[in-house]
Length: 106
Image 1 (cartoon, rainbow, N blue to C red):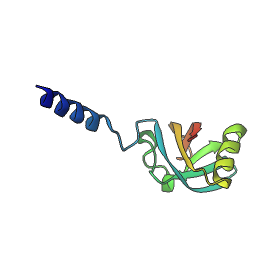
Image 2: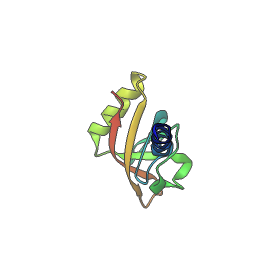
Image 3: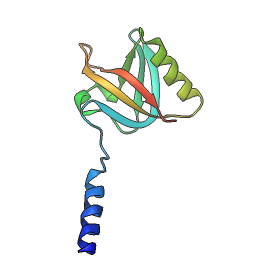
Image 4: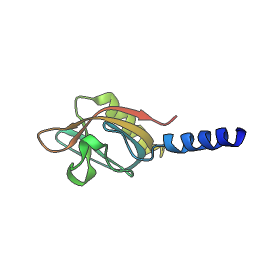
C-alpha cells in the first residue's frame, strides 16, 4: 500500500509539471529586445503564450504608455537578469502580442 501511494504521488507530481505556457502567460529568458513607435518589443526564448500564437517572429510589445514595465525589462536586460514571466492580452490590430504585466525572477 505504501508503495502504491508513493507511485501515485510521483505520478501526480510529474503530471503537475507544466513546461509550456498557459493561455495568457509564459515564463522564459529575454532573448531579444527592440523598439518601434508603439513601444518596447521583446522575445522570450520559450516562444509566446497560447493567446499570442502567430505574432510576427514571436515579438511581444509593451506599449509605450507602460513606462514602468518598460523600465523593468530594460533593467533586467542591462543587468543580465533575464528570467521573467510575462502576462498578455492577446494580439492587437497590428498582430503583435500585447504584454500587460512583467514579473521578473527574484
